[in-house]
Image (cartoon, rainbow, N blue to C red; front, top):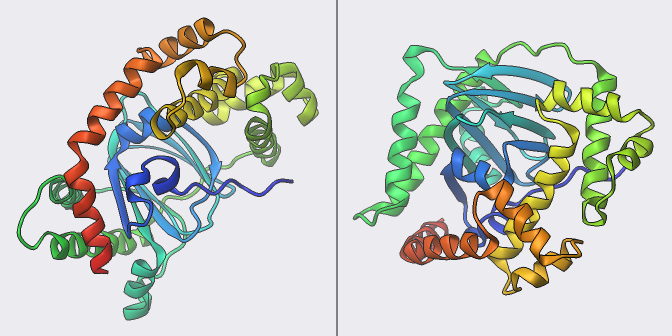
Length: 303
C-alpha cells in the first residue's frame, strides 16, 4: 500500500504562499483547480477547515462518512486522511493553518482540543460567515494594522470552530469494502493516470469488475469512475500551465497525450476554455495579486 498523498496547498495550488502560516481562498476557486471530487489525502503539519455556505457535500474523515448541506464545516487536523465531494453550486471558504498556531491555542486552553469533525451550523453560529468575509477582506486589501488583524481573525475563527467541534455530526454507516475499493482506485489513479490506463485495467488492479468499480464511485463520490481519472489529468494540466513555462504542446506530451489537438479539445471540454486562455487568465490573476503576495508574506514573517 502506498502512503496517502500529502497535499501542501502552498506548493501544489498557490506557490506564492508556500511558506505562509495561513492560506485562505474561496471554496469555488479551489474546486475550480482540484475539481469537485477530492480523493483521499492529508495535510501534513496543517489544520484545514472547509466552511460550506451552501450546497451539499459528501465528506469522508478517515473511515467515517458524512453527507450534509451548508451551512456546515468540516475540520481536518494534520495527517488525518480525508476525501470529499462538493456539489457544483457549493461555495464557501477554505482556511489552512500551520499546526503550531492551533497547538498554541489548545495549549492555552486544553478544552479546545478536537479531532476531525463535521458540524452542521445552527442559526446562532452564523457569525462565522462574517468572520470569514472579514478575513477575505483583510487579505485582499492593504490597511493599517493588517498583520495584526489577520493574526487575530485567524485565531478567533479557529477558536470558534474548535468550540463547535463538540457538536460534530454522527457518522453515517459506510461499507468498509466500498471504502477499500474507492481508496485503492485513487491510489492507482495517482500512480498511473499519466499512462492513460483503461478502466478495465484499474478494475483488474483492484480485483473487481468495471461495473462494481463504477457503482462504488457513484455511491461514494457521486461521480462515474472515468470522471475521477479525467479530473486528475485536468488537475495536473492546470498545475503545469500555472507553474511551468512549458508550452501547451509540451504539456500535452508530459501528460501522456499523443495529439496536441486532442489535448486542447480535452482541456476545452472540461475547463470551458483552451489551455492558452486558462494560462492567460490565471496569469492576469497573479499580476493583480502581486501586491497581495508581499503583504501575506509580511504577515507570515511577522510570526
